[in-house]
Each structure stands twice: as C-alpha cells, then as structure tokens.
Amino acid sequence: MYREEQHTWPRGLPNLRMNGVIRAVGGTYEHVHVDGVGRIAGDVGVASAARVNGVLTVEGSMDTPELRADGKLNIEGVLKGRMININGIVKAESHVFAESIKISGILKADGNVEAEKVHLQGALKVEGLLNAGEMELGLSHMESRAGEIGGESIRVRRLRGSGWKWLLKWIIPGSETRLVAHVIEGDDIQLEYTHADIVRGQRVIIGKGCKIGRVEYRDQLTRHPDAEIGREERTYG
Image 1 (cartoon, rainbow, N blue to C red):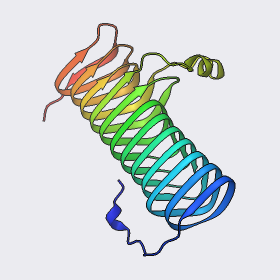
Image 2 (cartoon, one colour):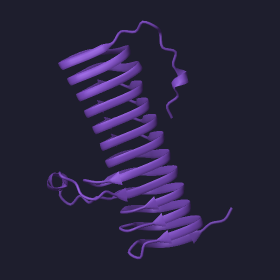
Image 3 (tube, helix red, strand yellow):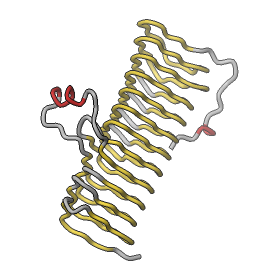
Image 4 (cartoon, one colour):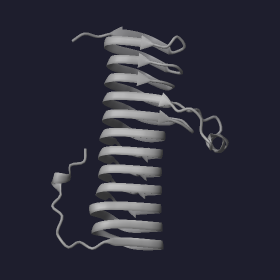
C-alpha cells in the first residue's frame, strides 16, 4: 500500500510542465503537468500532484500522492500514489501501490496491484495479485484477468452496453466480457460472469455467467440457477 508518511520532500522543488511532444529527465518535482505526448527518462517523484492530458511514458517508476490522467499512461517501473484516477489506459510493467484506484478504461500490470479501494469500469489484466479492502469491478468491452484476487469486500458485475464494444470485439475476436482468475478470496464476495478455479469467502454470492471449480464458504452461499459450480464446501473455524 502507498504510505505518504514515508516521504520527506525537500522545499522549493521545481515544476515539470510538458506541452506538445516533449522529452524530459526524471527527478523530483512539486507538480507534473502533461498536455500532449511526453516521455520522462528515469524515475519521477512528485510532492503534490501529477496531471496528464494525452500520453505519458515514464522510463522508470513514478511516485505521486495524486495522479489524474485522461489518455494513456505507461510506467516502466512501479507506480505509487495515494489517489490514482485514470480515464483511459494505464500500464505498469511492475507493481501498482495506492490507497485509492479509480479507473474508467483499462488497467494492465505485470506485477501486483494493491490498494485500500479499487473501483474499475472497463477491463484489467493483472499478472500477479489484485488486492484491496474494497473492490468493485464493472466489466465491459473485453475479458479481464488476474492471477489471484483478495480483499474484504469484492464485487464483480458486468456492465450493460457500450458505445464502442463492437470495435473491441472486432479487434479481439472471441473476447468475452468476463473475469478470469485462479483464486478469489475475501469476506463478502459477489460475482457475475466470473471464471475461477477457487472462490473462498465468508459470505459468497455466485451469480449469472459464473463457472467456478470449487467454492469454500463459512457462513452463507447463494448461487444463481445458471451458475456452474464443480464443488461446494462449507468450512468451519
């Protein structure tokens, strides 16, 4: 998780403003503002906030308390932030750590994604662990995948309709709007259109479009008539 108290930012930091097609060097800044297409060589530390309108590639890691991006963000290292708000596509070639992640679009991470809250409308591809205290995934456009998913409250649902869903179906033929994971574990779990080997929780709802190999629950299991579950097991203790 992101811990802002770990930082002791020096005073009098410069701002980094990129307009048009600009390349800059990494470093520590007070604010970062990108309008256009930017590329930053090296790690970036931001004391206050980063704002991206367009496309930004960071050839390293990025650490910022607040990140807002409209467009496409590529991080070749670790992405850290207290609040991450993306409208578009974000790709991290390592891990993502935050307190709050809100994405309308696509999230891709080659490592783990860990936060207190994750709210997504769109799709995700997480190679490692997706972990959050509160997780709400609204699926649309294409298949989403995560290695393992963990949290206290996990809700997965399929969004209704999309103005450009037909285009992604053409680009990615055969892609279905669903979530695929090996293990999903939490306290309160509500799933729709999810394929998983194991779902493990205290209170579990397996909804429409789900195919689950094994469900382990402690208190309650509710299943949709059309859901497929290979094995149900109530655990104690």
